[in-house]
Length: 206
Length: 206
Image 1: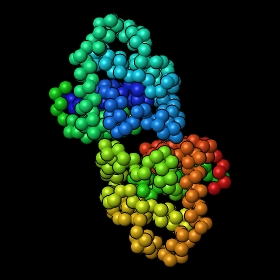
Image 2: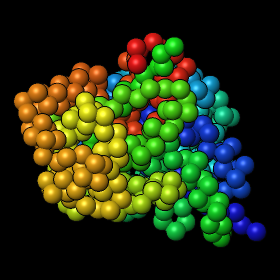
Image 3: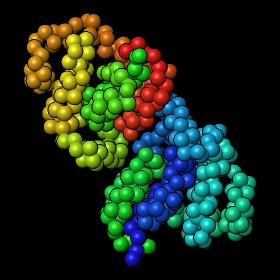
Image 4: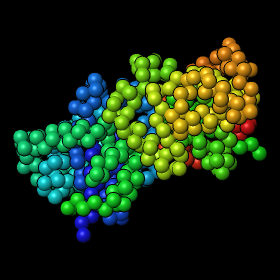
């Protein structure tokens, strides 16, 4: 029998997507839920509502709180945490590479490697050299992956995922969408989203 | 021995303050934590960052999500839920009355009654008639309470609480502040805030 499906929309620049990405695989597996990883870009969604920067930069008090909150969360989960500078990091190349990874079998490992580098080690994920190193660490030849990441097809796939996120009512990351359209926002709602998906037992064909 | 103290900053127009206000008393009691209820106004804090309305109205996708999320939360907790119209409700009079209540011994009951009327029954809490009815239901004579709510002293107390919230880095409601300044934001963080306060065992003199 097919497992119920949960769509996991995440953005590599998003801080709370880090603990979500590191945890969702194990938690969903334990609940019998299949996760569909959906890398998208928040930038176009933020710009559509008039923002040209992260809300954590536009609202300094909220930003200060977020960093402390993330530090507490990572501490509680035993995840390494180091704030990248600048924030937000440029996430376009990583998001395109992730789409390559999901058609090639190394998508999840790549996503976790990107988040660990960015928020676990504070590394600049917008740099191609860092991407090459992460790909190499996964045993993936960097050149073909980078070439594919810059193809019209992969660019279109990322744009389509972002458009679908907007259509589903997504306004932040991480977000989780159950088969019938039920939306959950934030790392705080991840276990609830998984439980919701598991209870519905929707035959998503996965 | 004194119990550790947790400051609970809430705003009557704030949706997620509703489940927090209904639950914090029992949860804090069970953890041996004393709660200091701090009614404040988010309006001045929002206006200081250029907002003239609730972020849930300024960002419609986030607003749609919030109402569904609140409905799920209330359903899970067995709390009645009815969306007030318009949103946000005018909360100034209720906030002033709450400050009267906390100097008079009926503060907590009044706050819970306001939230239950507003988000449990969808009633207009900005109307003086509704306030009179809630006060009467608590056995409080409405006229002296309303007169006191409009005194310069109570007005100043609400302004001071709002200024203190801003000074503490508060940018939304509900917010929880432990004795040493540790800040937690949102109904989602309430149990964590209580546990943090309990673990510190700060002698706050309550």
